[in-house]
Length: 301
Image 1 (cartoon, rainbow, N blue to C red):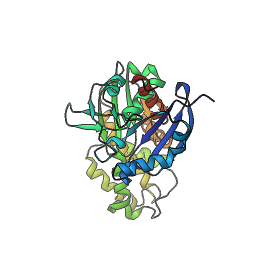
Image 2: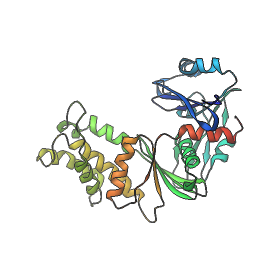
Image 3: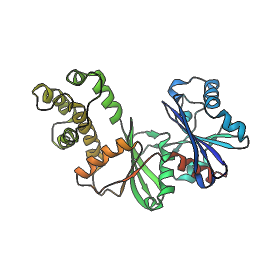
Image 4: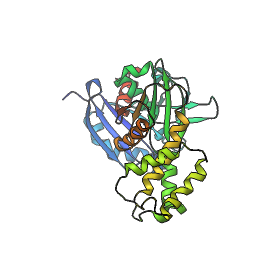
């Protein structure tokens, strides 16, 4: 096992993930807690959450630097980090790194204000990691990060030239749990996967009528037994993801790479191939690789 070189922190809204990285960015150990930025208030709470998760790492390796990305740098985070305007690359992000103290730095977010302001925190680091792991994507690619707020980022010549956020995951959760559509679905929130219903939803998104109108069909398809109660969540998911894809798959689309949770990325990959797109590259969490690359750029290691 290589010697420890960096403590990398992927600090999102709902959880904190820590990676002890060795030579070349090798992940030596991984830990996580539910101390996400949305649950913490004030610098003392952040410091306590960090100490609880990796205090022993820091005691064992007192000289190690720490580099964090994500909502820890938001306006309700430990301290607000700046936004870097697109187009931007790893060097541009590293140049505006927020130094919290002599050991801990926070990666800035990205802003795309070409049309209306759009922002990301954490995904920019995953994009840097994806490009470090797959340099062939740097020439030109479309990097998709599905999630509560899905990001579609365009990369050219190693720089993020622009991106768009879709609230697909949050809309699904709200509609599934708190709307009239919930009434015909399984009450416990669990049901066996139905790829058929999911793709039926993706297909429906191609039709005219608008999302607001098509959403009501989630109820009526169940009401008239054209879909079972267990199939309705997958149909709703397919409809929302289908509209997201329809918005982004316009004109010439470069190579697509999906980054994030494997199950959710597989769902997007199914929809993409169903719509005639080439099979996308599938990547898991690339934040550790991105934090390592940024640490190298900033000479932290």
